[in-house]
Length: 330
Image 1 (cartoon, one colour):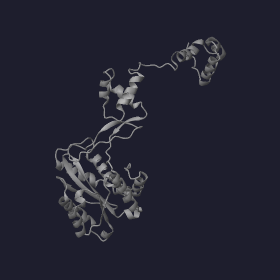
Image 2 (cartoon, one colour):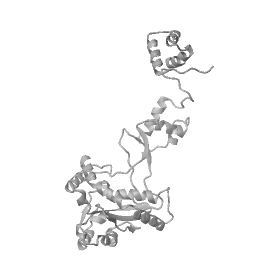
Image 3 (cartoon, rainbow, N blue to C red):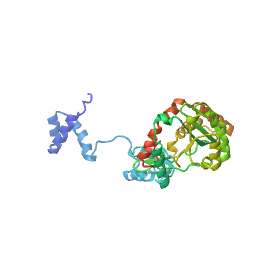
Image 4 (cartoon, rainbow, N blue to C red):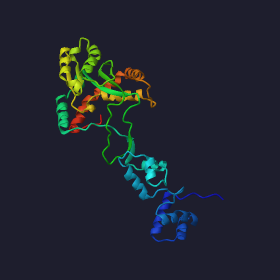
């Protein structure tokens, strides 16, 4: 004889009502017209544990140990293997990972870098943004630029940690002196300048050579007087010799405020290039091989991507004002 149908929701609610009236199980079964066994299977585990009976193996950690794992992992760079070891080795790292993934306010993510802004720098960002609020039509004539170091051993900063969503993010310090090559780039609304390279630290002389070889040809044309060159406030960019070089070559320029990568759309292009250059966890045997990969990644950036970034500039300025001069998510 086969098993009969299980209890539906209406029958379960009726059982609860009759239990509150202190009815016996046999009387409940008679009232519902169901067998005593099916009533027992539903009621007894509920009475015994306060919740429906669970199947499967018992949990290897107690609720207290689960809370300890969350406290230890919260906003810390600690591995699941280390947490399992600190718990006495009674559970595996896979069990630790499952417990942490079950916490809704805890997630594993890469630790991002963010500049540390001083009070004068925050005030400078507000002033700069207020003075440069403009429409997209006006921003089309700027040429943002920046430098980026690429390493033959892979990108810096692949750090992950357990981020507690109830707390502030944790950031790591970038290593700007890793082995590799320094790359200079600049873009406009309608094109990309040729990349400039340097294997040594860029000083004023090297910077001027890069600008002369890559920016001046890019600026040639009848509309040159409309373009404005944007750069950050690194020492080679603001030295007296560089300012004189710009004046001698009729280059109009404006400096970004200090520690403001969120205002420079080139930073987003560097991120795209890092993904392309180091895709598949690629490493390079020589600087020449790395340089070839960088050039390929630069040429493959669609112009539509750059134009979309230009369209974000007014929103970036507004975000700085909304953040009261502090860093934004751009």
